[in-house]
Length: 546
Image 1 (cartoon, rainbow, N blue to C red):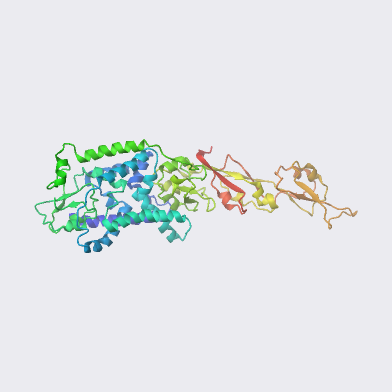
Image 2: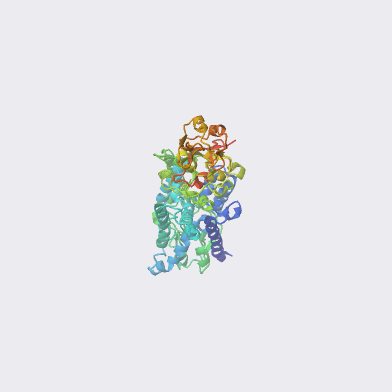
């Protein structure tokens, strides 16, 4: 049974990776197949952030991950983490090269616990202080999901241009670093830089069921060291560093003498002989893990006390999705994994480059030039695994006001040229755009009485004399001309005309009802004018319409 653990782990990893990629391709909405998006909800950082945001499922997922770690060590890193799975693939491809380098892979490396402690304290300390930037760029889930969203998704969908060039470069570098380290030295990223690995490593120190060496059977053939991607096996002193072991169980399956066991061990007892350089520390009453935990707590509190530097972020310059609550809330809770953007059916959600400021890079924003927020869709809030977008029912989402439409009359074709239009009115799902009577002149019915011009309070109607328009007595019959830049559709001209020569049906002009507008952007996206006559002013604090 123990020899099959490696193969079971590989099967689980393949299933997790497949579901992870499929969910980020955005081919199925989370409301249609919520099970497809379950793999994101069992990732450590989304579960942690969701628990901090009060999500019940996130609390359950976080407790399960912590219990698994306390029992079996860092199994999350090899079984569930997408970036960890990708590193395993790269490390497996690199194994023939490292084996050929005269045992470069077959060695035990020191535990860089100081680096891990500092990185972990900086990341979670700044998170406690309200800054999520470090976590956004070091979280293994966010790194891998951004790559799938920015590279794999556009390749499959053929929608190149969704991401800015600089963002793609940053995303590629953030993924290339851990994969490059995996090619060179296995799980070096996980055991030095990754904050999740550092935090789980502290808990794994006390796990009773991690691989251990049965010294009576071990022949010191180095087979276990050869397959250990974490460099956590000290064969000389016959010990396994539980804080770095990622639970891949390659050593358990590949040991020819069955000396590597997965059995209950006393986590507080020393395994094998103690290295000389560790004897002095081992003789001290204070446990090293306890000191590490206390040091991590102190550093985290010190980092959390550092105020977040926001700078000039222009937090109201771009609209954010319904469920965010406010721009500030989104920026302080979203890691920019890209899942909401890939599930958006209209493509209005795009990753920010600088529209949210430096700390808003990769966070979602609504680009109304690319699409609009569909009235009957709440996929983004249903997909968010971190709680940055609060889950909304469709009825709740329809009442969230994320912006306010502004009408620029001079840009409207109806008012500037007198051309019939009304496309914006037909696309408004809430009835916030009302049709007003924009007058047009029926030359065949007009008798040139001048009543409309005299009654117009805006002075928008003037009369011109044309050679082909004359009365039976030979006098000219003037034709009214409407200056739509002055017309406000008050209706006075209609009341003045006695010959039905002013037609209100030929032209459709909009008027905005602010009390009904949700800021979805459907009208501005449909407007054929350039620049558009309708634009959305984002709200930094979202509102709920009555």
